[in-house]
Length: 348
Ligand code: KG4
Ligand code: ZN
Image 1 (cartoon, rainbow, N blue to C red):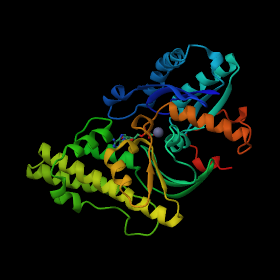
Image 2: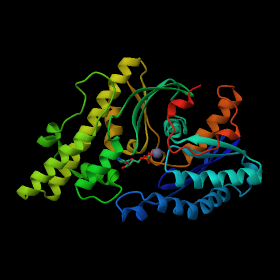
Image 3: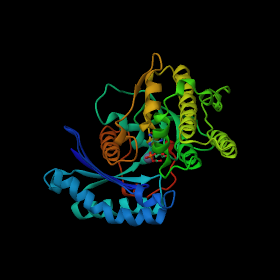
Image 4: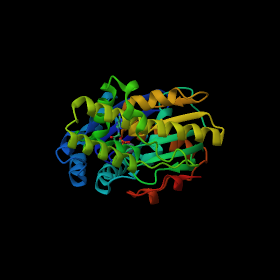
C-alpha cells in the first residue's frame, strides 16, 4: 500500500510517498521562503502561483525516485485545510485531477492532524495515548490524543501562536523573514546566557494561573520596550541582540515546558509529543526532553515544519481508520478545501 502525499497549505510545496511496508520512500520540499522574504511575510497570491509552478515537477521527481510508475501508487492524499484558500486549491486541484485521470483513491488531510501524527512516521516506541504540544505559525495547542481521531483540546493560546511570537519578535530585532529560525540562531549564539539578567527578568505569561492556556502577545510587547530603551540609550549592540533573543526564547520555552508538565500531571499521560514548526527549535526539544518522568517524542526537524511526508502518512492512517471502521468511508463530499477547519471536527 503506497500513498502519495501533497502539501500546499502555505509557503511550502511538498510531495512524499509513504509505503505501509517500507515506510517513507521519498520526500521532496520546495520552500518559497526566499520569494516571500522581500515582503516580510507570506503573500497569499504569490504563494498560490508558485505552488502552480512547482507542484507537478515535485510529483514527477517523487515518482521517478520510485521507478516512475503510477501503478505502484494506491491513493493520493492532499492537505484540504486549514491554510490559505488559493494555496490549498492548487494541491487539491492537482490531487483530484490525478485521482480522476488515474482512478486513484483521494484522501483529504487535515494539516494539524498531519503535524500531530508526524512523530509516528518513523518508529520510535511512541503509541497512543499521548499529549501533543502543537506549536506552529498559526497554532499553539495542548491536545490529549487518546487514540486515532480522539482529540481533546486541553489548552491553547488566547492571542499570538508561539511561532507568530517568534516571527514578530524577530522583526523587532531587525531579522529577515522567516524570523523564527533566525531568532533561534541568534539565541543559540549567545554565550553568556547563564549570567544574563534579562533571561530571568522576562515574563513567563500565565504560568501563575491555573489551566493550560497560553498568551504570547505580551512577551512581544516586553521585547519591544527593551529594544526601544536600548536604542534610546545606544546600547543595542549585536551581542545585546543575542542576549534579547536568548531571553525571549528561554521565556517561551520555559512557559511551554511548565504547561506541558501540568498537562501530564492533570491527565496522567506521560508521553509528550512535540510537533509543528516551532518543534524544530533546538532549545525547546532539549528542555522538554529534560522533564522528569516524561517521555518526549518529536519528528526530525524537516518533518516539524510543513512537509509532504506527514500528509502522505496521515493519508495512510485515514485509510487504515476506514478499513478498521474507526472512521466513515472517505467520500467525495469531503473533497472541498477548508481554510478554517477545527481539528476536533475529525473526532469519531
Ligand atoms: O508548521 P509550520 O511550518 O507552518 C504552519 O503550519 O504554521 O510552522 C512555521 C512556524 C513559523 O512561525 C516559524 O518561525 C516557526 O514555525 N519555526 C521556528 C523554528 N523553525 C520554524 N520557531 C522557532 N525556532 C525554530 N527553529
Ligand atoms: Zn504547518
